[in-house]
Image 1: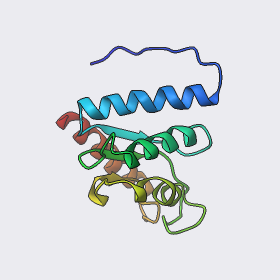
Image 2: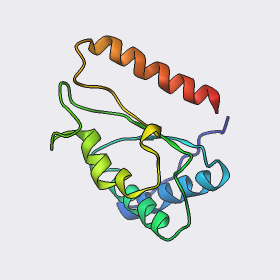
Image 3: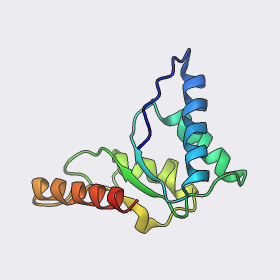
Image 4: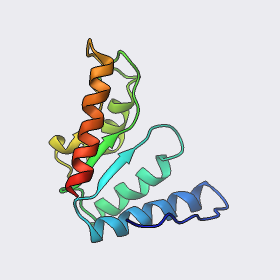
Length: 130
């Protein structure tokens, strides 16, 4: 397991560039990398740089797995307010990642606690495999 590194960053642009380069380097070393994707404004610059690197042919997500970390309940990914839908539309739909490798909570379930347990098992299973 890698040790955590802490970087002191001056601004959003520098943070986005550094984080994207870290992910790019990891993808080159481990193509089957598991990524946790958050929503909000903080990761937007990182996603933009990763998409640019993909379009330039520097990286591939074809063997990666993505775990979308947050979502509203109850809401479907097709809803315009959905975090899952937003990440799909703005980022994932433009990459070569197989849809079967994108994991998220089913927020239309009648059993939210059971769904959380299922999702946690997926995260543990895929991190154990790697």
